[in-house]
Length: 207
Image 1 (cartoon, rainbow, N blue to C red):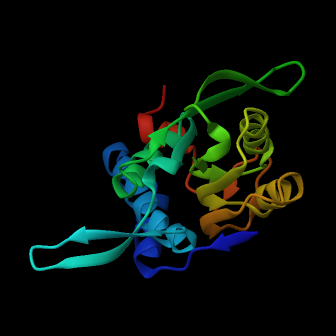
Image 2: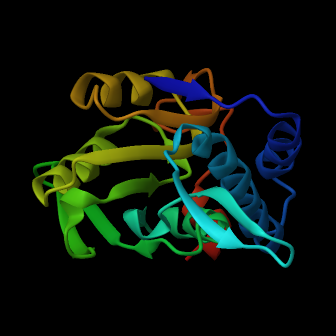
């Protein structure tokens, strides 16, 4: 299932994000802000529990999230900027990290780093990566998380291509995709059109 989040504020900030004149500093901030706004929309589906608290006036029944159940998992490295935004909303969540690279000979994704909280099977994972292009690396990362015991995963990206959505939907039909924009296509270099360029380079500076 894919949800394209329609929100005027997100659209406004995404327009700034796409602009090639946007500085690294502003780009990084915009990614974080968009992730915060997306978390608000994704959170509409979260379950709450009822507890009783004391206000300064009287006892009161309230509904809360069990934030300790959430794990924010950025796909290194670009996903880190989004993770910061999610954590500003779900500040009680824990954090995991997963990093992949593609083997130059076999073209298969290889995990080079992974650090996850305990009891992953009991958690709700919010996986972040600004771009969903071909979907190959993303699909591999999601499968690696499943192999580590994850049962409930939500994938969040800012810009996506139809090819990437198709790949994830076919490989992981149980994982909902939330995106701020579904773009037109991929070019011959597998960059999203119109996209916003290389998110990692624009967040951290081109190496």
